[in-house]
Image 1 (cartoon, rainbow, N blue to C red):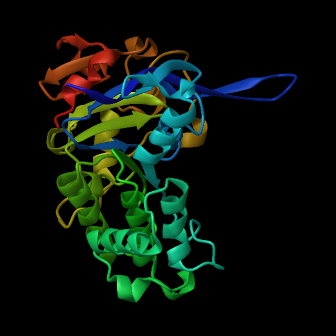
Image 2 (spheres, helix red, strand yellow; image 1 turned 135 degrees about the vertical axis):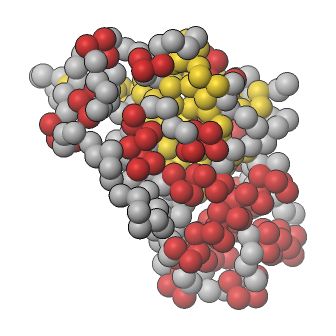
Length: 336
């Protein structure tokens, strides 16, 4: 099976200060793998500061890892040059959180869609370029006659975000990185955009890495999930299994933060024990130690991943009766 993307023990450390340097580990020893022949949707979930966006920036080649290697079709993305780098730029696309910041208010929608066509030489004539634009807009549920020729301020946030998806689709990508794509869109339009992303995976063979803090949307769109906390992998596996029967205390906290339509169920029963500002690192141990209601002395040593089910594992000593799984083999947990 051909590998489309592979994160191999990737770590990213940010440093600041000239005299007394301070460092922050944004991502710690994370591995994942996607196959080119089996397009899928993988959710990377976690609260603010968990390392989700750092993972996206690494994947897109905007920043380089401090340790580990990122492979795209078997080649280290930091060493891609010339035609190979242009192919990577075309085949790996992104849809970001803010549907308003992407647009230059002085240009019409046509300009946003024409630039990638010209840059990657996707059309030989203006008529062919227009056909491509109309095809992409139609694919994301928009009517070209209502969109082309208009300025950004004349469009809703939902329309703008779907145009961003259409722009990515124009390039016939192999991989789409969707970083919180519905967090700034009205609730009524979220289902439409999520359905658009799912159709891209199903009809166009595009693998999607869906980055979010919202497990409700993750449950509706993804097949597999990785839960991050402060740069570390807490839990991974089949999205249905992980969300219905979470095994890591942090995942349970995320699930409990969802407001359920059930008056008999209290919202926030598993509240964090301390404020985020009071958290210390506790050395190399579990990053969730200070907030965990089940913290033990041995949690001050880094917990490995314990595999409870064929498609579920958690980095928590509560499950130390189960066999360990190497971070290199996390991909085995992620169904396609």
